[in-house]
Amino acid sequence: MSHTTGKSGFQQGRGALSNPECRYAEHSRASYDDGWYPEEEIPALKTTLLVDATRSIISHNDSPDVPFSQSINPYRGCEHGCVYCFARPTHAYLGMSPGLDFETKILTKPNAAQLLEQELSKPGYRCQTIALGTNTDPYQPAERRQRITRSILAVLQRFQHPLAIVTKSALVERDIDILAAMAQQRLVQVMVSVTSLDRRLTRLLEPRAAAPQRRLQTIERLNAAGIPTGVLLAPIIPALNEPEIETILKACAQAGARSAGYVLLRLPLEVGALFEAWLAQHYPLKASHILSQVRAMHGGKLYDASFATRMTGTGSYADMLHRRFNLATQRLGYQRRDAAVTALNCGAFSPPNRQGTLF
Figure (cartoon, rainbow, N blue to C red):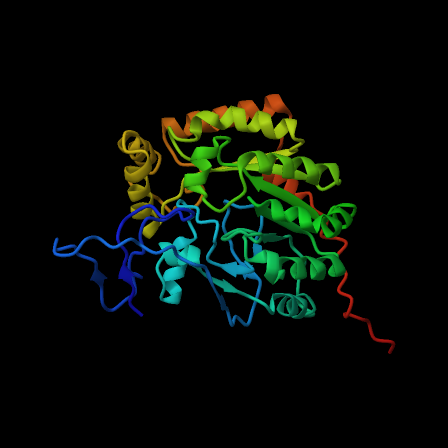
């Protein structure tokens, strides 16, 4: 499948500035203005929901960088439009662009709950915390009507199965009834992703995600309901949101956040070029310095996928960020994110359909 590269230009409510070819495409096309006709106005892009005909729902990983080995992604692609999203390249596996396609062509998994129940009921299944929101947000706008994430929560609650959620959406508050009940059995932990407290910056970085002050309110409401909730600073971008590390942690602590974690900016494959174009458009005077610091933390490259360092970087700048984060979290009384996840209760797991024999 071939996609035409769109004209570079800022579209209100979208993160990527273009729709680069899928890297697996056999042919490539590009727009070219020869000056004969006036440039046409680019029409606003609408979101299209497609059905993902997957036959399994739980993904497995052996990464030492994350405190879980199982995850579920109810959606592929994400309408939040975060320009930095490391999951963008996965859309190329579908024959689509990691650019605007990723945030406008969303694949849904309407049978996720049924598949999950089947997998959890298998005799050989071993209970380990399942993470929601590892690639794309489980509470992105499509969830309001699709309610796939809520159906997954209902299954996990019935099986008394622990889960960890990462989201930047206030929609998670809709499911407080399920999450609060699970929290009473130590079955859930929520991390709210807070990138910046600057509304202008977040509108550009994460155009369809909740405003930062709304995310603080979500942290407050979840914790008030007895749901252990923390903050994830992700991604930390040098010289852009990096100066806010301490400010964000303080504001989230005041909202009741109990645990904290962070992830450095990750720019695999097509994400690097998309982010560079975004910087040139919105922060041209800072672009060179930001990219220089990113390369300094990845051995001179925009991204290094090596385990143990891909999320934290290496070098003096990365070490400085790590020290700042640790000092601030210690001062504010935060628990580490990985400790909060590993403390979840796997012993309560009880498949309702798994019965012993009488003879």
